[in-house]
Length: 158
Image (cartoon, rainbow, N blue to C red):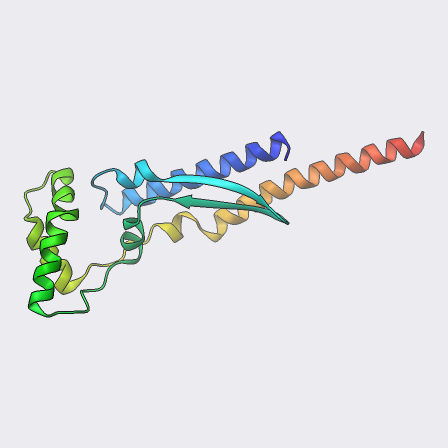
């Protein structure tokens, strides 16, 4: 892979990461900064092209897609889940958000009602953005092909 292609792909990975972070922040649900800290992007060459992937916090999926209420609405099951979620995930969330909410009350509400989706992944990694990257990559391939053809024609004349 030539340096021009590496530059195009590095730019695409960094641009996608910036788009994901901006979209996440715009959801208003940022608290600990874990999503921003954990987000990593990379590209890999494969037969016929490249793949760009991003890896990050698991909770981003639920932020993007939303969460249904607990399937098991049995009071004992909810009590157990609220105890675990309130003392682990939500206690940190309340602390990081610097709000005076009771994490167990928030967990109870989530268990009973769920929460709505705030899509940011599909908006950040849109068809238009992918098309833009494809054009940039194609431009590098075409420039390389044109150069190879010119070199071949010059050799043919000798």
